[in-house]
Image (cartoon, rainbow over all chains, first blue to last red; front, side):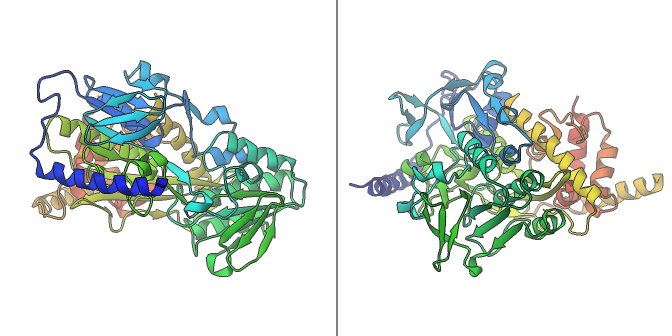
Length: 434
Length: 103
């Protein structure tokens, strides 16, 4: 039986379980039964999970909270593009879980979650142990689709070395930076941008901007080619305006309809092949392939056919598995974007809902905010913002709210937004990790 | 300016009065949850961060005035105009009360 069949089978099984659970009378949680403190397990220590773990303890200090996260520290995707520009180093975007443990009393299990049994309410770990929970919050993030699962032909794991994705920050970020540093002036950097939905919608374009800033300073005769699987992209007008102002003709963007979709790569020759057969050879290639929710979500039955996890818009409880909440990039929270800010917002509301549900109270009615800054050039940044609410379990964007920075703003406004972007980074990381 | 402030407060007060009947589609938002989203930029304890101002130590009147002016565009900011445009007048009122009550 293939992995795919197993996951389809388990999905069906969990749907049956969900139906059975809905029909059965609700089991009183541990706290209501007057037993030991309820136990909430949080899987994944990124923007959604670290926030959820901290806010669970902040709202309910007596709760037992276990964070399942194999790493000792977290490297943020936001600002990893600035590492590519040479503006930041990796330690400056790396954050320790120490305060979550020592200040807030979150127990960290340094292991990886590999399975969820919603019936027994247990999480199994790669190391063989299992954890039982009263409620579970899963914030697993994304996986890159391999060639056989809707990814790009030839872009298997071995190809990640020759053509880094750098869409999970860390070693991949440094690898791409080293390749850019080794490239000769006059070379071509090619970025393959993914189809929707994917982590960080403005990310590929901020990345192109940051690499352009580096080229302008160090390798001014170089070119940047963005091959895109989309017809348009986040903050497009603002990015293109900034590119023209700062980089002239250095950046070329090829849309889907102009044959921008990369369907195959050859890592040996660093060649990217598009849908209609155009071959582009790069000196440095950055392939950001199609994505889906991380394996733990897909293999345990939290994801639907789309590869992402449907949730109740009010509590972020899974639509497929009762008692399990899914936040962050892995969840289907559209119109909220898959951003760190959104995940942080969702982590807080899921924590609040879990505390309420464990105490048999009605969860509060949430509202979310998202603000995403993108750096385009030194002292020049742009933003997109939005306000969202849950109406009848569905997330909606508030009419008249949100949108992008004005196109007619002057350089002072762009500079102000770059200052705010840096302040935002410090705020949100301290909100999660201090 | 004082007159402007008074007029804005009065308008906000009227709007709260008028919108006090909840509709099925617009249940009132838990204001702690809405205020919790401010921390993403204004800091874990809303104490401000670098160029981003603190939300602590202000009177309810001041917060109401600022958010209302951001919402109307009377006061130009960057993201705050776009965010405040998504807050109902009743939410601005509740945010002002909540934030001003923080120690």
